[in-house]
Image 1: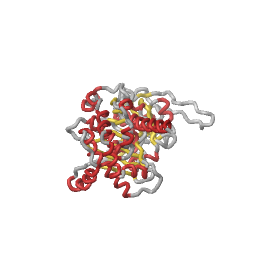
Image 2: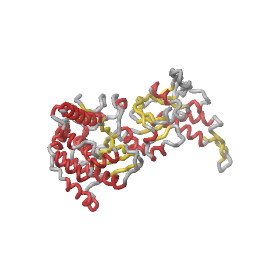
Image 3: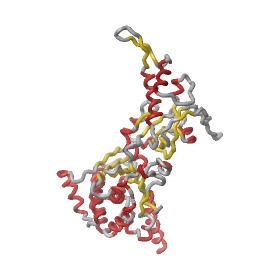
Image 4: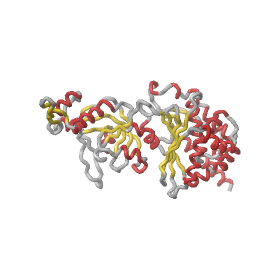
Amino acid sequence: MRNVYQQHDRNFRKGIQQLLSSIKVAILNENQNIWLIRSTGGQFARHFRSANLIAIKHLQSAYKGDCPDIIPSNEKIKDRLLNNDDFSEFRRDSNGKETKFLTRSGSVLLGQIDKFVNNIMQGDLILTKNEFGDYSVGICNSDLAYIDHTLVKFDVADSEQERPSLNYKLRKEVTWGPNIKSSDLPSTVRKATSGQQTVTCLNDSREKIFHLIYPFFTDGEHLFFSNKIKTNDEINALVIGKLFQNVSLSEHLIHLLLNGNTINASDFTKLIDESFLNNFLSSTCKAEFMSPGDMWSKIPLDKTVMPAAQILAGVLACLIMTGQITAESLDKLNEKDNSSIINLKRAESAPESMFNDKYKPAETLPIFKTLTTNAKKQKEQLEELDKERSISEINDRLKLKVTETKTDKLENFEYGINVFQIGAAQ
């Protein structure tokens, strides 16, 4: 029997370690744009991934199927379109003089080429619908577009349908990472991706898209946190309401963990009532009430406190207030266990110029150990908070789970996404 309990303890410790070590906090780059590149209904998405690129056929359309070896200027492309009756027309001015203008389709074609060549930049996030109807995510490697006349093709298994080769010649280099299930897209993102343009900017959906690939991310002023509601049952409105309250209370728990102050369960409930009047808690939440569904939270950071420390405290507070880390599980972390999970690291090869000084982790390496120590000392108070706020019960009802990430390929190169990761020291 003793061996059974020892195995249970080891599994318990392993579970929390795996959860913490899987957590990455992405750092939003305000200069990073997000683009949707259509691949003919996903027909050429596999070509994109196999050759590490994106490509469009618009330049060939402008040149009637032909394509120059060097990318022409916008002026030269416009002249070419004006000489193509498919994309231009004569219009008579008030003096009766006829002048040739681009049609709407000609203007759109010119604009799409310009966006692809001049607006998609190194470090921009790229989405494309793939052959499974889901979305592949990548990062553009270079500002420079290029012309390549080589066909992109790949071998297919005997059981697979033969796919046509990709002959789009206007291309850019892309490093491809994870896939996003189409069913996971929030309605606003689904609407943004439903247009007809081949090259579409998705900057208005930036936060929602990052919620799909990272459980936590930050813009330096807020910590964003996403949860998956995994239950298939009907969702009780009162349970969701209390979950929203608990996530809002993470803002208060962050301060207590950072300062080592005593956690008092009844104070948390009082804060809910007080905040209706004085706006003491300013966290916000959004959700799509489906089962399964999604919940997205935005927690303000204190500008007087180092962001990295608050970010780590926020990770711990959010996981505690959603029942994904319990007082019992924290108590199972001893010093030996802690040594492998308390260090902070960022993505390898990240250029210093893209990593703001306020995020540098050098002074914050001991912070997570301090936070877990502060929390472990208050095991009884956290257990009381769990009961007072029905934290574990809410988790049991909704089966909450943080967004799973498979984002290494988006991070481990020069212009990849910078992240904080709770893991072994580099």
